[in-house]
Image 1: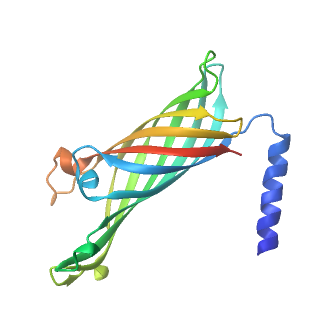
Image 2: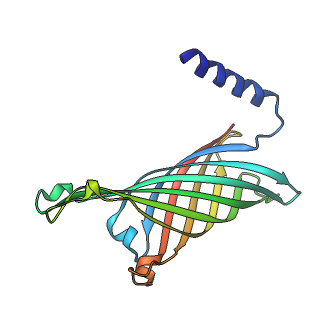
Length: 194
C-alpha cells in the first residue's frame, strides 16, 4: 500500500513538473457560519476541503468546476443532562466558477461561482430521553452562490477567503423563514496548485 501511495505521489509531481501552468488546486479552509440562521446559531466549523479544476481560459477569465466538502458540529454533550447529544453537519458543494484575471495585480484572483449545496445532519446521543443515534439523517439542499478571493504567496501556495450564500429548499414541516432557509459561510484557508 505504501509503495502504491509513493508511486502515485511521484507520478503526480513528475507530471506537474512538465506542465506549463497548473489547472488543479486543493485548499483547506476553516468554515465559519455567519448571519442569523440555525447553522450560525448552533454549529461550529471544523474543516472545509476543496478542489478546483480550471477547464478553459481566456485573456481575462478562467472557467472551471470545483467541489467543497465541510464538517460542522452542534455539540451539547457538555450539558450532561437531558439534552446530551451531538449533531454533525456534512456539507457538499459542487459548483461552476469564473476566476477574473487582473493584469495589474497578478497575485490577486477574485472569483464568482454558482452551484448547489447538499447538507446532511447526523445526530448521536440523547435528547429528552430519546436516543437520536437510531434516527435517520436529515438532508437539506439548495442553490449556492460563492464569492472568493485568493492571493498568491508563491507560484504554488496561496491564501483564500470565500463567502458562500446557500438558499435551502423548505419542507412543509419547517417554516419557510430566513432563519431556516438562508445560510451563509465565511471560509478562510490556504491552498496549493498541483
